[in-house]
Image 1 (cartoon, protein in one colour):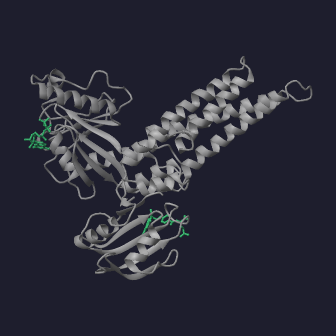
Image 2 (cartoon, helix red, strand yellow):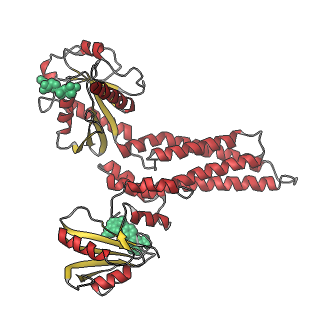
Image 3 (cartoon, rainbow, N blue to C red):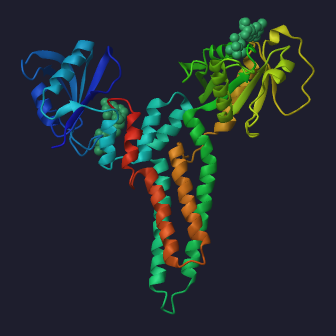
Length: 449
Ligand SMILES: Nc1nc2c(c(=O)[nH]1)N(C=O)[C@@H](CNc1ccc(C(=O)N[C@@H](CCC(=O)O)C(=O)O)cc1)CN2
Ligand SMILES: Nc1nc2c(ncn2[C@@H]2O[C@H](COP(=O)(O)OP(=O)(O)OP(=O)(O)O)[C@@H](O)[C@H]2O)c(=O)[nH]1
């Protein structure tokens, strides 16, 4: 028999109320033992919770019951809403552990059961994970929509169209010998396939924005040592409206701050000062700084008043930087200088900033907010949000392209490419072999979800 799983779903204790969730075939037995009576489906019941062995009262709690299949997981589910004291939660979890075939849930295991039971597709699962990870309004909006199935529906519709096209082609070549079946059926299908291909290409282009919204616009501060990069980061992040979380990067030289700029997520990255370094550690720091620069959506090039010439000598932007990455020159320590004549190059935006006075970074802050808005452009249509989606969409396009262009090949082979293209979309929603992928996706979930 399938195991029954349980977990604290409500976050860290102590808390006012803690929610302990239980799912699986033993739920009815467990609940009737802990609180005698099983609540009516979808209703809560105030009950004394008792230790199954000693019958000692552990707490007075609200117990909620969902009879499978009408539950989040599709199995029988109960929720115990008890007091959020450490010892209360420990005592309840401990009594659950005493039941046979009952064990603590793995991260994301409730959701995994919902997926296995066909209650959610993979894009909905990912939307749910993104919703829990969301830090800004625009991220929340995109995640809610994806969790609600909008993206999955788009891919399912495309997949159905492909399956239909293939059926038409196969029907056409079954009757190919008969005279009165017009060849135009196939022509129509290939024209439709071409249209779908264009739709998917358009979706892919627009989805850059979806991925950026999910992970935050990457803004990387670069410049010579001592140019004032760290002070700038602190000055921007220190504004009450801006800071959400601060975390050290994977290296001690790369610091990331997650900003919420009026609902748009921006990851601001401070990097090691660029110069011709002697030490191995510093060289590694610079290598990583350059790497982040290459991945950036925007580079803030910090230049101090008398440092403009020295940056050229000591090290500039990485030579292989894509010309598509915009670079803004930020004149740091603007409180020390008399403003220079307007930069005539016209290639970069030039923004004076001072970390020393309260209004010193206002212009930069506002320019960044505009940039984030323009880069992300929250859309009403669902967008791909992960490189995983992009990967399979590209595979799908490759197969579709083969099918559409191969008019010298027999229809059987072209129909087979249509099937492959449909399968690629099925992999995004998880309808087609994704077993090895699931562990990776669910590993990132919280316990209790
Ligand atoms: N207490 C509590 N709050 C919660 C959840 C939960 O599981 N428990 N959720 C969990 O993530 C979210 C709400 N989402 C949910 C989605 C589906 C079902 C559910 O039981 N669906 C059944 C029955 C629907 C019905 O009441 O008729 C179904 O779809 O068949 C429950 C919660 C957020 N808040
Ligand atoms: N007057 C003034 N001094 C500043 C300003 N910003 C930074 N400084 C000073 O410049 C020095 C270097 O600043 P940091 O922010 O550490 O420079 P950095 O670019 O991060 O340096 P590295 O981490 O070595 O690359 C410090 O002494 C700061 O106090 C500013 O806006 N005005």
